[in-house]
Image (cartoon, rainbow, N blue to C red; front, side, top):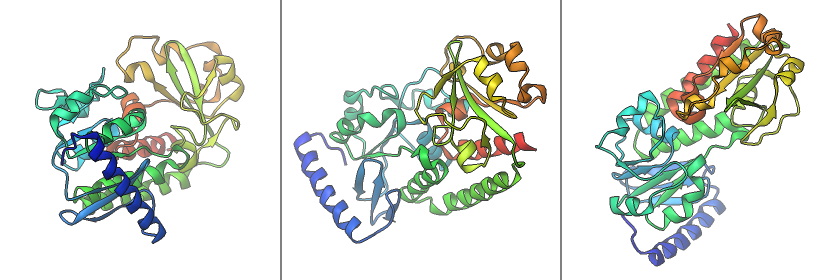
Length: 318
């Protein structure tokens, strides 16, 4: 159901806005639900509103790698994907000529999107600011995850995609298992054991605490933060080796951003190999955990990545 005329699209948006008001007033579900059955019309409540589709979308353009991972896992075909400098290995098939490149994660090629005549465009995270312009072209949903409630929000997004594409049973089974695993990990954290998530890039470091993009470690899996006053900003708090020495975490989780985005830079292991960091409890106990950069930085809201992240933190506590 392509929309090539902006004016018509604005009237459609107005109608959907009225629909959202009605459904909200009637109390029909949370903001993260997809209601209805494929073929009967599906209403998706997303981060920037509500979108109602006539049936299961067949020409889907995706601007988020976490969403792409989930759709790939559910065997949902897409026609357009973003170009990224380092596509995660398990998604490398999407770099083939079979799929049309529709711009980058942050800068869509609107003409290319329009040419594909999609019946659904999906944005999230980095691509969310393009929602307005993309929704002028075709029905668009924003699957951005709330980092303040990361696991709940991420699983609801996955569940909504499962409903939208008629994969409810597969999604439910996987999400039930994921929640059980998360509960087991949370219950296995030793009392008083602290952790800290650090991202490295260009020879610099940032630390992340509860409520941040890496808040899963603390908020959902129960690792006590080694530092209590870190901001939840997307860029984290700039830190130094001296900061790490003072924080002295029992567990140090490291995300190498340069590796994730295919840039050359001072490797995380090299950056952290100094007397101050080596003197921390995490280093002395061999508990510096180098996280898979693609999983934690690029596809962290995807179904497979969520499962992997929970497993990785659980293994670090064993």
